[in-house]
Image (cartoon, rainbow, N blue to C red; front, side, top):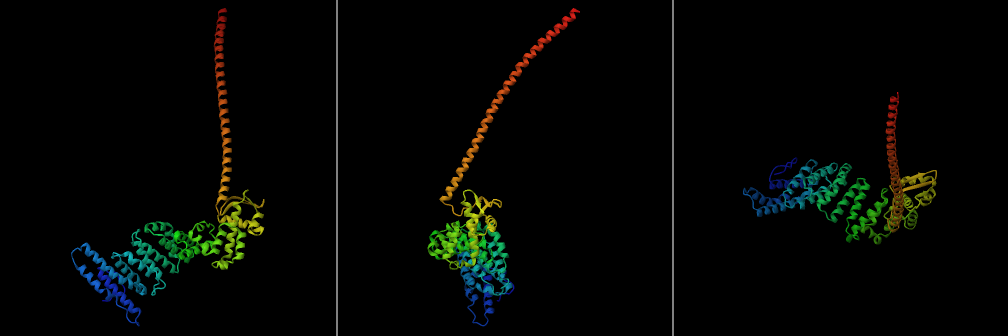
Length: 471
């Protein structure tokens, strides 16, 4: 019985659906290769196993655990043959692709070995659809997204599905799928890695796949971020391996040519990068120049080692020199004891015209390397903050010195505050005592005068009385 060409999702038992799927694969093969000898029939190959399954499915009694195990084993034998023939689905008519893959995934999910079959199906879906060059990527993403969302968050098969999604996105002519995925990555990737319990190799592979997809979408900074994450996932024991060396070279060249990357500490801290000291000495030496040296050292380096001989960096010569000037100005600002840079010192260090000083200072501020204030009147740049490119013993000593000065200043302020407080307390006590004495004197004086008034009043009354008596 031939399968209808417009519907594959039908109700039925595993054996019925598997039988229909096998017939559909045979019909696809025959229609796609009409002039070549017919390949072996998938339907004929799976029919004996399906017959055994039909007999067990027809049995009305509840199967025992041993019988259930035999049923799953028989299903897996049938599925192995169906899955091996599934690449033919990529040549199916466009309107049938989704239904055909959905049916196969439905069959796989009834297996006891889902994690064995689904990753292979994801591999097929990440390949082009011959019959749908225009919409094939969208169809594949739709199927893969359905599979991804149907699996439990902790199911490690999601890892393989996600890798297939990234592979399909790379083949898409539109960046819409990448833009949508990028938002999810920012919010959920860390959780996914923990839930899937990935080892170092799997984590490295995942970050590389994300980096490649971002690079193809034109998102170079995001690509570098995950390339760096892949580099950090390399175990120290594998730092000198060929694959580790390739990742290290990619990460290092990307960091050098990206205009926004000025911090090379994550690279110098990597064992795989350090291994380049012996396997790719010139590239590693260039890293050391960008990590700690100035424009003078950079120009001395390229005078003896042309950029064209270092992974073809000559096409990025302007970017490299610009970055080196910005980094040189940052180092100059960080190492200036007075925190004031004259325009002439900037001109000499960056080898630029006097009229361009303010432009380069502003560009360095925009890069987040320094902060400060320009003074055209004084011809100087007052440094408020500067980024240390290398932080070693010298820088720690400088920080210690500044902390000691700060501590002494705070102690001086504290002494002044303490002295003023003591003065205030003394003056308060003296004032309180003076007030108390004044109040006491006033009270005694008031009593005397009051007594006099009383006595005087008495005499007055007495005189008045005496005058009345005399009359």
